[in-house]
Image 1: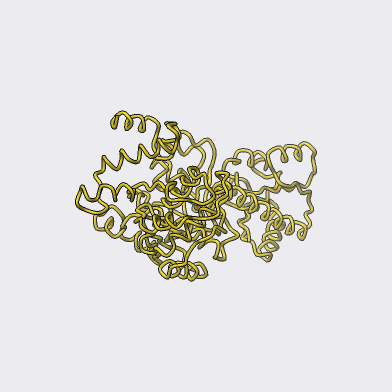
Image 2: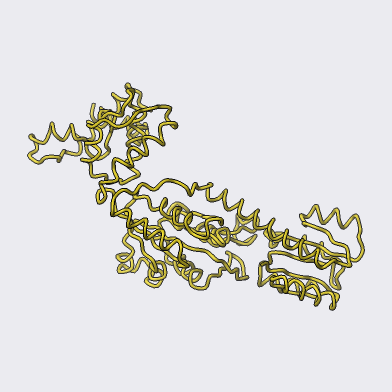
Length: 449
């Protein structure tokens, strides 16, 4: 079904085409001249423009050329009683999809409209796929523990439902984004786009345009009309990462879109209807932000229709080794290594660690270890744990009277020394292993002499 703007001055033909197109399941806004067409265009964004050329108040192609920025995502088909080569050439140069000579075969027109809508949706989906960085929805979710299996059961249930707002909460690195993609992949929306927007990574001045789009000239750098994430995700899923970082004024606009299922682009006056499932992701305690009046209570309740809490890795340790083996297998091609597995000492070290950075930290540890390991099996000596080193802890526990508690400066010194040994004194590589810049590493080398 498409929204069609039909511009035709012949009353009988306008009525006949409107009836035929509506019977085919389309919504038609009919205009008898360009002034009336402009009024319709001020209020609605048509999927298809069916445009006569010879109109009482001007030439159809002049109208189309003037309004091209507003019709950027609209398929245009022109009709004329007199087939002129000049008009046909100009129409094609302007981006018109097809050029029909009257009398119009109405059945052929219906087929052309259907093909036009298909072309338009294919183009929009391709664009949306590029913006979503071609996310692989088939990524494996490792869940051997009862705690994480319960989360996957919830994901499956809500994916098959008609719930359109979902809130996924959990610490950083627990796999919330992967679960959102899994949810989309299990849903009836999986053939439509999934768009991911980081509410913290985009400057506040641009975030509204990123979400809602903007009209040409809406602000200094708005050189052309641009569709926002909501429009690009139409029919599919919009993932709002770090939704707790939204500023109050944007929270109000997001609430409006969620409740009304329609939006206005920045600088625009037309309301655009969207059908989008919104998944909010946050590592913040939104209830605390609501108490502090930093997050709207009504928006929280609107997002929290179906809450999903993702447990930290320390609460489902049964998955640690399964995840480690998964990362070991999938990351080996990236670093050009082939190892047969983990040593018993490496497994014990991984199981004894609290994983404050959760699954993301585990992945990084395995990737670093693959770079450092030169044997056929991943050993404990190649594992650099960011927050605590068990060998260091055991050697200093007696001196400090509390097992596992190490002075921060001593721990930092040991990590720097271990990274320099692993990198054969190459400062650039050692900095990469530690996840800091070379200047930061040089400062610490000087600090620890």
